[in-house]
Figure 1 (tube, helix red, strand yellow):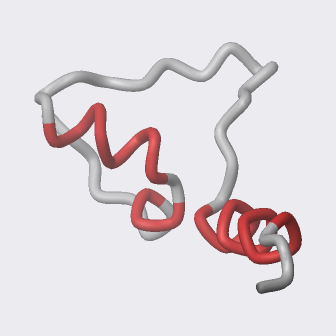
Figure 2: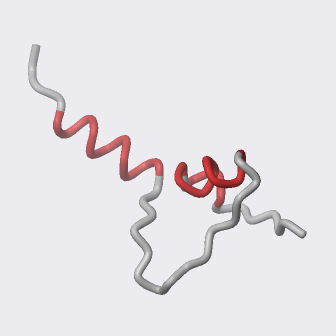
Figure 3: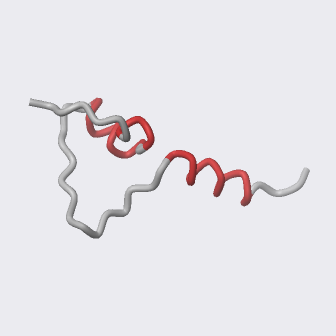
Length: 49
């Protein structure tokens, strides 16, 4: 039975697994990144045009 969590929408990796009907098991050494962090990294790494 899936549990609804308010933070799932902020973690694109977990959303992708959920869409495929899979589960995510945390190993306490997680590599999941928040969408806001990914967006900020993308923006910071964009080259000036």
